Image (cartoon, rainbow, N blue to C red; front, side, top):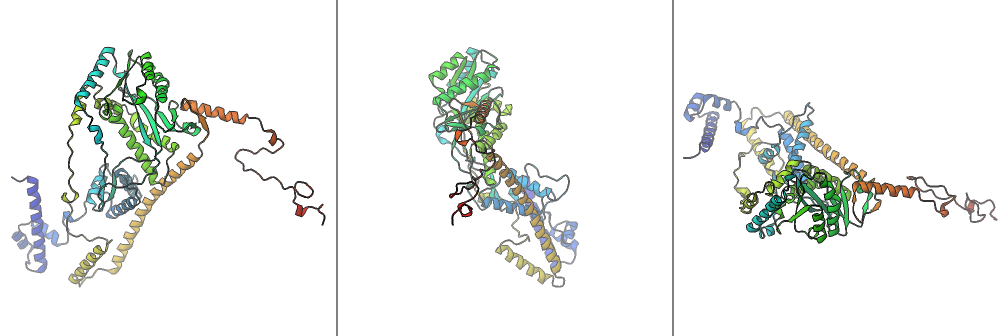
Amino acid sequence: MPPIRAQSSRNSAGKEGRILLAVKDIKDGRINSLRAAAKLYDIPHTTLATRVNGVQSRVDIRPNGHKLTQLEEDSLVEWIISMDTRGAAPRPATVREMANILLAARGSYPPPTVGKNWPSSFINRREEIRSRFSRRYDYQRALNEDPKSLREWFATVQRAIDDNGIQMEDIYNFDETGFAMGLISTQKVVTRAGYYGRRAILQPGNREWVTAIETICADGYSLPPCIVFKGQVAMAGWFDNLPKDWRFEVSNNGWTTDEIGLRWLQKLFIPCTNSRVHGRFRLLILDGHGSHLTAKFDQICAENNIIPLCMPAHSSHLLQPLDVGCFAVLKRAYGRFISDLARVGYNHIDKFDFLDDYQRARLEVFKKPIIIQNSFIAAGLVPIDPERVLSKLNISLRTPTPPGSRPSSRSSQFTPKTPRTVIQLQKQASMMKDLLKQRSNSPPSPSKTMLDQIIKGHYISLHNTALLAQENANLRTANEKKRQKRNRSNRQIPCDTGLTVEEGLQLATQLNLLDEATPVDSNTQGKTPIQPGQPAKRAPPRCSGCGNIGHKINRCINRVI
């Protein structure tokens, strides 16, 4: 038995066909009575009367629930295509913001807004645009997934917790994650409908590596991060507008080292967790990185009642809470901020930009305890639940439906609209000729047609003005950010053993005071000191004839002619 919805759809299509035939017979004069035509084609008399009087079918007219007018939607589509051709295709959230800007441009108060799911329905009903999404998969890790070793790991964690009486509040996980400062993450964007595959998005492209060491606790608490930059010294501008408990390290390549790992343990992890220990022992879950497996690292852990547990190789994507629930959100947020900078003209991301955007991205993850707690739950650690991880090993890939096989909800019937291509112009011209031939006694007024086109052009200009105004505001914000960055100090500060933000600010202040107290060189005595911020002045001329200051030889009165 066919579904009820399918039967209803076929009945509606058949009824619409009978209505069109009845209207045609009445207009051609084959049937003179509305009631006779309604009875012949088995359709309601009132429906046929309204259709004969020129009322369109509900399927052929624009629904009343659309907040944007047709012209506003056309302007929005043109803006999306323009951004796409420039390599900066917008996200659905950005499309929603632009739609709200067009609504606000009407001048009503309070301005109407579109809903959260409006971009999805907007994309589905517009043939010119589509949303694309790409995601990276790492199949090499799947080759090392072994259910037996995973069960042994959970048994080891359970024994460590039971034998040492470890509380949930004393279970920590720490790991480092790397950032190429100028690379954006894969994201969903709105692009042209005719473009298939992954859409290329412009990015600043600075591949300088930065390592961030993060630590989380099973109760939702997160420790301050440790940032490892590539370099030999620190810059005073790094420590501006950052929390005082952040820590900085430098290395030759931006990666963590054994020494950095030890300093993180001694100067960050132990001091920050000593004040919140609930039991005697702390459990520290980590991966098998070389900087975590040194004898010195293990000795310091034993002296401070810290039990380090290394998870099986190539399993951190399943067993490590930071990898399971935190780092992906963190990198996605950071990539979104870098993508926004690229859209407003940033072509290079430096360390100052990284610190600003990393701080913003970090707030989206580590300031929400529920995200951290869910990460431990998803990793099967708190509470201990191996099945949560083992169930992820059986993943079947879903074959996507080809674009051409999707059913279309749009009518194939041509609807009159403003022509934008040669084919549309030909259809419009042909339809207009037919209308003029049928209504030769009452042709359309040329003045009314010209007025409609002028009003329509004015609407389009206003829509483009609102969109361009928002782009200009974004560019001004980016320019102001660049100006503030240029004013930051580039003073070099020794960073051989790492520094917190508070220590870096204090050291920069001491070096500045030391420079101000430095005695003046004997070669500069007797000269007018140059005030800071003033340009250097040229010395007055000296006569090469008489040797006096204040004139040249061509104006010397003592010169012998």
